[in-house]
Length: 405
Ligand SMILES: *Cc1c(COP(=O)(O)O)cnc(C)c1O
Image (cartoon, rainbow, N blue to C red; front, side, top):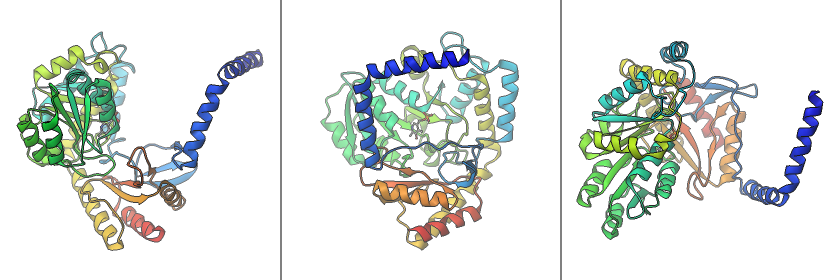
């Protein structure tokens, strides 16, 4: 019986295949081209939980490429919150937030996030990608302009494109370049979107300078702190807290849960009017299923851990320092970054992939980041540190990099 089903399925696959043969051939060409350029992506499949070491194909590897900067992805209190809520609320949220998918836990998390960021309100999203799409498409349209740093995260670029606003790119971390672009623009609303910590370079946006440029030019500044929230600042409030920037200077703040907070999802924090406008108009809020309550509960627990275990931020800071000074003693070509993201620029994609493979053979997981994720000729090993690494693991990485480069 089952073989009969299989063979009829095979037949239908074959028929479909022949119907779009030339389409598939063109895709094969495209894939071949990507392979020849050393840009072909291969996915790793972990056979373990996330952590400072992971298992892949029976290899035990020290993991230096995750965004779980504080090691919270399997924090016992968060796991327990997740389980308890799953017992109580089940697994799925059942609907979008505007229909019946939003429960008291979503509300509590939004209130907590508003409080933590010192703002009137906050709104949850299933991912940072969707939060960024929401900001640009809700607050900019055809007659408006969106201004992005040259190295802005892909989700900000896509957000700007989807908004139909005029897209301007300014030089990386260069307020005067932004100033020039704003002065030349005749757009109605001007929306400036910037990463707080640049995801592939690890450097920080010059927020104070960007704020003055935006003020002078009547532009609205949006800061995406995906890589700073939880890690930077005394209480993990992010780059704004670290630089003691008054919340009023940055009207719209976006941050994610999938990195330092160890869960998944994102939020936008702003004043009530901005949040209410998003609730009414943001399509990536309205037309998507609300986050599972258990996940929301784990994120709530994560916020508690951020407060009670500040040692994680301190330890991460010490490991970053240790890595940087060891790397500079070895003469490694690190980008100038003070954050947990420590990119080692290799240049060519082939070289970067080869070194990544060599590191794998020596027991380290560090994927090569290649164009178009980073600019042409700047393929790199994006090394990330986590509070759950040991000093010994960092030293072993340095030793191995020294022997390979
Ligand atoms: C990772 C990241 C995002 C996307 O967040 P997800 O929750 O993973 O979709 C957005 N912005 C920046 C700067 C990021 O690094």
